[in-house]
Length: 585
Image (cartoon, rainbow, N blue to C red; front, side, top):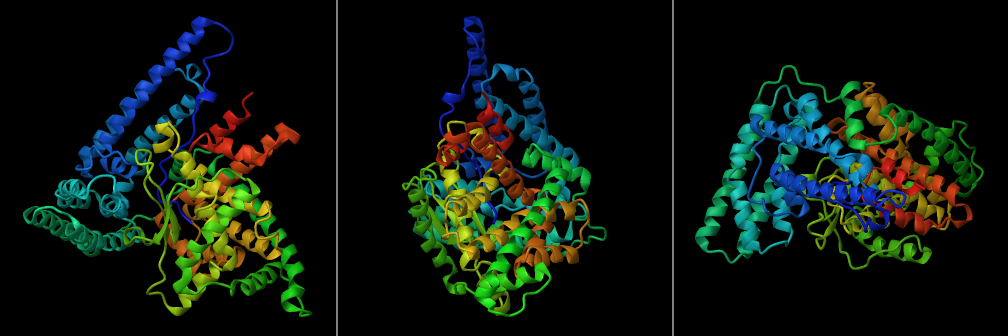
């Protein structure tokens, strides 16, 4: 469960804006001027941001720079570093106290983004040891798939972008120094997976276009050169000597800083790790209670195991045999979506906009290798675009691996997965988010808030009777939720505490009750990513804690729908800032 794309926000912030307290007209005018000045700064910042990041601009629906491709060399890094430091200097000219609440959050988001840029270039230096950062396929695939402009216009922009792909990969070769082996393997896999974009998707689009034959031939030539460059990069990665590869583990110093920038939590990485361990103990206790309750139903008078973890595992394994066939996995997901919409409406949990499209599709090849299910949503400049529910394919899997995976995503878990990814999780939140006039919150959205919302909705749905309060559903949700908790434990343990693969598999299989295939996939994921796995639990915990704080404050006046919609109205802001705004008197 990983969100691939998140670039959005929601609703009007007018009701939150404040020109200061009291009736001092002079102070009010000063605030108004300051707010307008900051808005002008934001507009300039966004414009320059897209010049520095044309590929990102394309993904969010800003298409002025579709023909550009950033060459990943020292020159482009120096440009980005200069941009970040200049923008940080400009931010210092604004006093936070002169900005309204929404703009204060924008200020923090911009500052965090810029400081993160500086840190990643000067300290993290992943461009040297993470070859998987170099891949052009995703942006080209996006341009071919989305109908934001006539096909012939998109093809011409793609042609200009493709013309720079050989230079792109030559520059990439020059940056890489002692790369991490597992990240090298990922780069090879994903770049080879992306070849189909040029060899199949682009050719199909050329056939459909009304371009003259000479122009089609010219574009095809650029595509052939791109394929050659990608294959050359793969060969380089395979054949270049790497006697002292860097560890894929970040280490405590880099990890703490990355957590600070990426998660923007009110807690430290170590505090979240400790909270996750405590949550794991609580879940084990609750799962043991339910398993004891269910035992007679499924095992009659057979003697219950004395080891609580063994008892839980046996009950989970018994329930997990109820799953769809491999060939029905995607269709089962599609069939589940309308039922979730109906439940949310019936329980009046929050407003669902039926006019926004959700397209369930096979996971594109260039995304393969990290997550089995994900959401890719349209950017703030392309609010009418499709939201895709990407589903990993089981084609080519062995019978044993496929069965293990399907048991992991059994009858109960598959429903929870759809809550998380679609209704009322990621898809619903991102539809709300895309309504916002706050472009900063859209493009610099906080992943922990987005992931946390999806996890929070799982619990919210069950709390409101989804699954008829069946103990089987609660047991399997606890098991699923344990994944969220153990994601945080695993990520910190691997990157900070040097947890071995053996100990990681023990955590995931024996303590989190995951199937072998799922646990192996998670080990791969934690080996090729860092910090992102903590976003689920961190965001969930902070949202849940906020809801309980609002409940306490409002007492009998508390309404769940009002809380959910007000929370979403602040867009993709870090939860610590939403908390300030929701609890502000």
